[in-house]
Image (cartoon, rainbow, N blue to C red; front, side):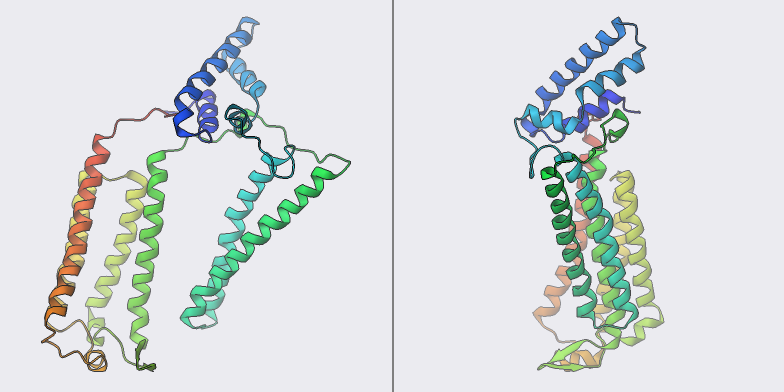
Length: 323
């Protein structure tokens, strides 16, 4: 279903109004737009032209919503606030990720320590965000006080955003969290082979996982992690269904069952690692039992959560385009 200009205008305006006031605001705004459209049609305008003209008369939906809730849009002054805010958001979305990724690639290619690989992109991203906010604000503050007014683009209905799928937007955080976690997990599996164990402050060049697992099991787990990333993308695009919940069961079983079996049979951890931490394997006592329950518990919880989300998604009523 394609949202009309009126739907898009009401949605764009209502999203900056407090949730408790949105239903009344949406109703009043639709009535106001409808009255304006009827007036234009009575003067001989076509329906589409009448809708377009009515929205032009109302102006920027963000500013209209601010007037409705009596919340002036002021930074240094009201004249350029909307233009300033849109420009800052655009620059932050573009420049901060690009700078972080560029620094990350540079650190990886230069062979920097893992701590620098993680810390440097974060530091640069924060620095870029601060500079974007400061210099952009400074320019608009100077323009606000200058004798010659800086031209500001006129708002038109063509600038209205498309109505957002709120369900998909809510899943974006899950997607980002899953991808980041899986990427770190896969990186840790590869990185541990070089040895990252510290005992009494001394770094020992021994792996955590048994090197023999590289013959099959470690590549197998890495492939499963890649499939988990693909699964997270599908969930973001399509949402949870009973089929997706079933696939989630298979992925969890495919990872957890062999991992627990390798752990309990003493084939998961490198013997050198166990010696370094003075763990008398296989008689690990309650630690083995606790870790096994943790592994299995995480998988079971993820499976239950998948079915819960599938059930909630199925029972959710179809939302209106502006709801």
